[in-house]
Amino acid sequence: MADPARASVFVMPDSYFEADIVRLARLVANMFTRVVQHNDKLMTVSQKPTRFHSRAPPNITINDYLQRVTKYALLEPSCLLLLLIYVDRICERNPTFTISSLTVHRFIIAAATVACKTLCDAYCTNSHYAKVGGVSMHELNSLEVELLHMTGWHLIATQEQLVQYYYTLVRQDPTLVLQADIAAVAVNASSENDSHENINSQAET
Image (cartoon, rainbow, N blue to C red; front, side, top):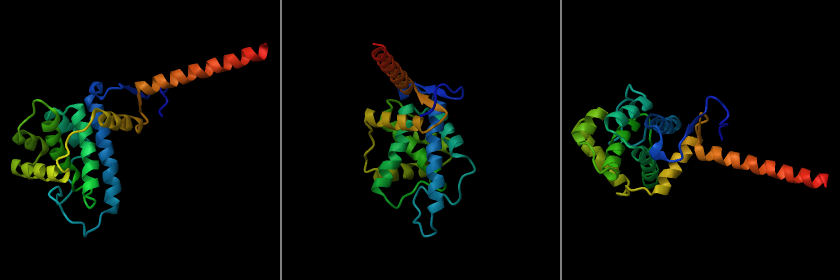
C-alpha cells in the first residue's frame, strides 16, 4: 500500500463516480499497456488474426489513444472500468485471443462503443465513435458485432465488480491511495496506541 504521508501520493475517492476521469483513464491505459507488453513477448507468427488485428501497431500510445476516446466519446468512469471487465470475459471465453500491440486500439474503441450503449442513457452514434477511434464506420460496426459475440452478449457488470476493478487499479499504482485505505491506517494506528496505553497502565499498577 502506498504511504499516504508521501508528498507524491495522490488521494483517490472511494467512489469511482467521483474519480478524476483523466487519472482513471491513465490507470486503465496503464493496465492495458502492461498486458500488451506481456503478451507481445509471447506472440507467435502462427497466431490466427482476428478482426481486431492491424497490420502494424498504430503510431499512438495506448494512453494517448484512450485519453482521446475518453474525451471525445464522453466516456463515463463506469465505461472505462467496463473495458477491463470485457477483456477478462473475452479472454476467458476465447483463450486464443490476446490483447497485443496489434489488437489493443481496435479493441478499445469497440469496447468503448459497446460500454457506452450498455451503461449510458445517452450515447453517440457509431459514425462519431468511428471518427474518434480513427476507423471507418463499417469497420467499427464489424468490430462491435465481433465483440458482442466474443463476450457472449454478457455486457452488464455489477456495482461490486466495478468497485473491485477500481480498487485494484488504484492499489496497484504506487502514486495513488484510496481514501478508505487512509482511514483504515488511521484506525489501526489508533487501536495500536490504545493497546500500548492499556499495557503501560497495567504495568504501572
